[in-house]
Length: 315
Image (cartoon, rainbow, N blue to C red; front, side, top):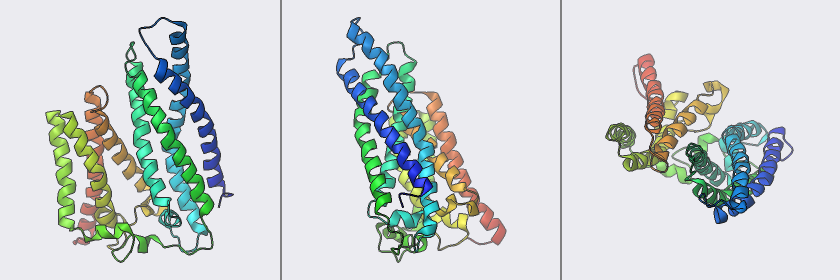
């Protein structure tokens, strides 16, 4: 499996990022331990130059993380064609014990890395650079998560057995499945939708009240609530099949790659909802969060409305 073009591309890029990451990690430790913006010593002057180098490396790595994550999902979908039993990326993820853990870690890293970029952007707008020690201290922790991700990714691809039968998405994401996600199908649909729309309305309310900590908390809750609602309810209207709950299949051309748009809207909306509590408060962050969360809710709701208009019934 390591010799497929998509996997080789990911592993080569990961190798390059790991080398650059080590350089940035060493520089980050030096900066974190020795930084003093009020000092005029040669050491501080040297650290200021090193901070620009380290920031450039980190920005480069993190800026590629989002498109590389999308390419990772594309690669999973592509190699599913050669794995027995797999019909989409879900089968590839299920082919190893660490597949789902890797996906979760990648998503967590995306949020943390995006937060670093936001913190860096705020730091560069202030001549006193108040977030310099914070952002490089944060990267020291992120470096270890990043390296764990790279190792797990290489291990996952190397441990996939092409001839080993795996489960298809239809069996993984069903109430009869023995996987952990099968317990979600016991949730009442009415309660789930009440949580989804209620969570969104509270986000709207606290957008106007400008309570940034509650606004952030509601966005954190909105991430799992939205994903569960998407899998259990809204996804079936995208597929127009009551039994199809896969969160990967609508990334395919059969559904016009709408999954990429759905996840993009959710990521941007919730990310900007999170950062309002951790960087200098910005009206722009509030507006971007509400806009993208609203587009996410509207898009999913329209699938249900259009299906009902076309067929006169709900699934």
